[in-house]
Length: 113
Image (cartoon, rainbow, N blue to C red; front, side):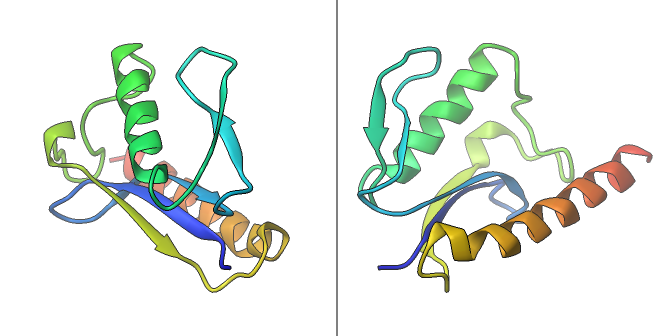
């Protein structure tokens, strides 16, 4: 079994808005925004879970409903779930951390325009 990553992509340009990595059947996440119930993420529910989180963040005005790079509106966003090459979350930590740093740098560079 491989670690998976579920991403919210802006649609037209496929800019990653937010992503969650998980191990199917093992990774627990907060079921609903603001509640303490947990859900175990699976291939069948992870994309819908992330969609619910994104929509709740937008509803709570904690997240903007457009892509900050291309202005694609929330209605155009896609939620995709794909396997990674990693066999464990521990193995995935390094590459995911590196990608997070790259995204943070890109965010800082784009926000200066």
